[in-house]
Image (tube, rainbow, N blue to C red; front, side, top):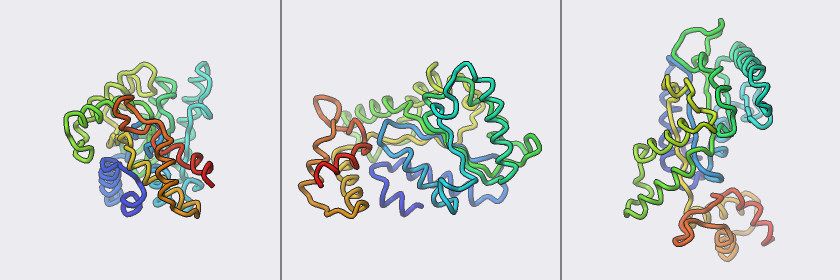
Length: 270
């Protein structure tokens, strides 16, 4: 996993550092005191879904198809605000039932920024340092929250530091954490708003995904060409990278969509 992150995850040194630190400590402990809880934050196309699926691929034999990996999307699983109490009950039962089947289960919560506020708090009993909840030992489980919330703030901090002549690779978690906290945990639109998960400090690792620069996008283009078995032509790499919108308007420094549209843009050239 560490090699794969170093080789294939473009431009995210903080992500590699946080994810590997969290996993190493957690998996090396035969009796962890609580489940591993990570929260991924960043704008579109910066690698959040890619990293979570890579992580699952290395931990579970069938990856995302494993019966012990459970993926939740608010739009698919919890679409109606008026049914929130019903969702809470079924989510609690679902997690409890699956942890009874396998204590090493993983739960991915996608698009936390679209989650109904208050819903996610129903899983608090499963996240803390306790021996047994509802008759189930759950301390070896992994919970990953994925969110675009905080992306704009991460981008703003990264841009401000760049303008202050601080190299992107020198950005630390401490530079970003206050901005993420404000955007994610104090926002009434966020699934984490006034959440006990935050108040009780149940998230072990906040993982920020930085905006990608032009040379990062070019690396994504090269990777995608190789993956599709296509010739890596420098002119195509350049043209695809140039065709993506960049911000801010004056400097055109960071990709507005990360690497998300790279695959579809390559098809125009072949």
